[in-house]
Amino acid sequence: MKYTLSIFITLFILSCKSTITESELEYQKCVNTKTFERGIFYPLNTSESDIKNSVNVFDSIKKFENYLENRNLLSGINKNDYLSFISKIDKTDFLKREFKEFNNDNYFIKNNLTTQLFREELLHICYFNSFTDHQKNYQKQLSIYDKVFMNSYADSKILTELTNEMNFDSKIQRLILTFLIYDNLYWKYKLE
Image (cartoon, rainbow, N blue to C red; front, side, top):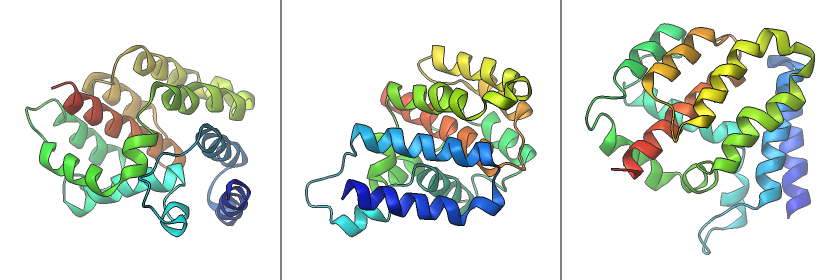
């Protein structure tokens, strides 16, 4: 099954090649591979087809972005939309009910992408491996990722700083930010 899954993911990534750069393609492949190599957690009664349809890391993060848009919590996917959304994160109970509802329906992201190891792979290991040729362009983002990594979760100030440095023309960069927002909310509500 592991090899079938790898082939499925590789074919999916290759089909998206025209919309993302080679470095982003390499990065996406690295994140997915590292996640799958660790093993994927699912309830015992989950069918193989359900797992196969939900195991792409960036597709799962995109589900969260879509969820926010569909609930009119995120008004769009440009920088100003994200900045407006982030400004509300620290408000008491903002999104609490909606966030729990999303997590109930998205076992993969909740149980596989909320570990410190995943954050290290996403923000450091795969990032360095994939963007070594462009490190000068990404140096500011890397320093902000370090701030995120050193905190138990990213606060709205760090997320705002990162949003201002993001290239919103890059779906992958935007989804990294989306994940960090998810991670922020996950730990915020878990620690309450």
